[in-house]
Length: 251
Ligand code: NAD
Image (cartoon, rainbow, N blue to C red; front, side, top):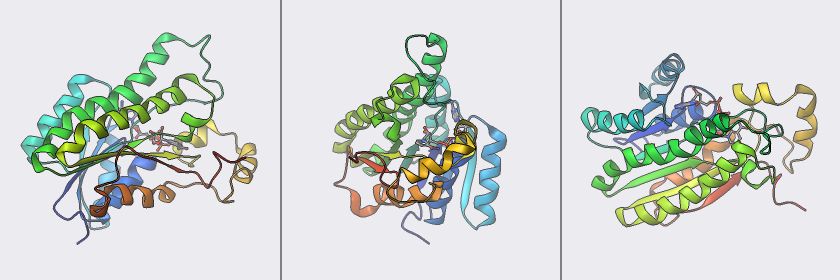
């Protein structure tokens, strides 16, 4: 038993990394978690890990950036559970932030990043929030990034800045239905994705630039997720919380 017993939670991009950690935390809190990922094999692995721990989870293939696929998720949820209470829009794609320039960016790459990172959160929210509205209760958490505040620009960081606008817009539109919409902006978290993009020799310096001298792990974000999804947080909406060991906004 936990605070989310009887609730249905959807986590996109939960096949690995941060999304997997979020899915496991919500399952540990009692929710039945829909592990929604483009990669079915990864989604199945997450489900196995959760069920081995005594949690409830089900894998569902979805391409968040594809309008049909996102809409299908909503239809499937209605048929399978008739409800949804928590949605974490976590799926995103990225390459190196520093090489993500704008003058010479390939427009197809630019559009793919926005299709997944921004349109994905829009489309999945459109598909899932009506079920929350019917219940008169919902918690939506979008995954931003401190990249949004980095001043670097580029497809990834601009998409993450846009996620903050999307969060505010949905907070305004869905608040009357008992649904809160917030965002978490993580700093550098070591996952399969960042292991590839961060050169090993840079790790020590990156950690030294944080006030908290510890490498970020997916588990370091779970407290913020639990706060935004909590029963007591119903008056907290449209907010972004930075979780980065205090690297940003420091002079
Ligand atoms: P990751 O690449 O390890 O995992 C992303 C997951 O999303 C994968 O399982 C992948 O299959 C899935 N995915 C990709 N495209 C998809 C699509 N179109 N539809 C459905 N699923 C799709 O990434 P991560 O490091 O765990 O990051 C997760 C989130 O956190 C992302 O939104 C990322 O931008 C954000 N973030 C990460 C960091 C970090 O340092 N790792 C920092 C700030 C923000």
